[in-house]
Image (cartoon, rainbow, N blue to C red; front, top):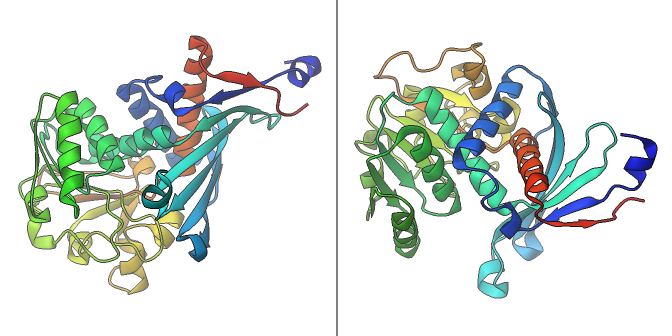
Length: 337
């Protein structure tokens, strides 16, 4: 593109209503798998997500920049977390804004709502982990936590596996009931809320956890051999959803080792010396590109520790942007010159 073309270029503004429906669930799954592939091949630049904690407002910000070599793309997501938002202000407790940039010039090609994007790419991360680490033919999904991440997990895993039964538990019965009500409209599945977390784990082929717990909510005795666990909830130092014995039994894979050491499901057991780094089997990206083995037996217990990596955002927003341009959605605004 010429100097004149860049100097007259506008930035595309995409709200949530523009983002929703741009891509299919399968397209989100494919984009996230490409991000993990790039991670496994080390074709990216990315630091662990940065946290700024604001105790005064019971919240924090997270900054998540990344650059991917193949496909070439770059973006930064700015995440706002405020525990009192919904109750006091009618706003989501967690939402985000995404800036998608041209890698060569740094020009902001798009400024996007990141909330629906994050729901789908986070769910897809759990789904892709199941594609590579769960038993073939898995059909029973247990969800511990019934919020926004659980919705994305169900969408992704249903697309990849074709489920038969879904059980969901949440600390708030209203949350799990709402999950069942909303998703029963979307899927012709046996979806039920359960009263105890054990009922959402025992006998399940795949378990997805997405709680903010700081002590285990899933016990070792509840997890059968052969199960795959997508542990999505631990994303900050001190968070933990799984009893450590589960990790000791399992083949444990991470989305990004540096980030998981600090923020992931492994952070507490490592800090307490209950497990060691040598117990980690590898990254999901390494499994995808064939550098590490994944499941080798139907009896293997596998765990995917997902903190959510910025690389996923850069690859997914590329596809959202291309589709938005093709469909002519959003508004354009002169931003830079």
